[in-house]
Length: 239
Image (cartoon, rainbow, N blue to C red; front, side, top):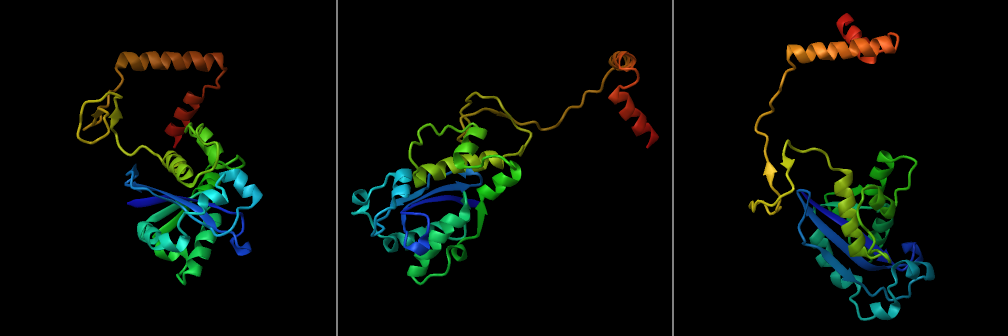
């Protein structure tokens, strides 16, 4: 499974007002592992950034003046993302700009070149309703360090979002135990893994069961018959 975490920086908020993309950053995940096969470029938008946007990304017109135009990197970008699942935070924003750039080239919309698009902002709102779900807020929530993020940058933000996405979607995928020590295994993790080939179930002894019942008797007496465990047992026996 190939996934691309994508972010852009732009000259302003609205592509219909002539704002353009000035930076594209992409981070590749294959089978939920970072590969290091990333895509990144700064772009000459052939216009100045709006004051508010410049305060966010800090990419000046002078810095961008000798960078390639979007048309010069478009084919490379299209091939890089082709058929992959694209992961974006607040996808409508980035897609509006990408679609505008693709339209200038006479190409179909961006979504027509990729497998599917996942919006992590939508996911975060479903998982954490009523809470702040900006990238910074999610980094705090999932304990991902973003202390080096003084200004927005497409590649930096894509890398942070990749970590956030993995944390948001992480579940227990096996019965393996991470022992936290290197054993030189060839899996490249540098972490010792103990595989549980079978689960051992230890049943309580008669002595332990008797002690358990005595504890429940005490709880039931002190709570004047409000022991929840006993109530659950009674319901189970009734059903």
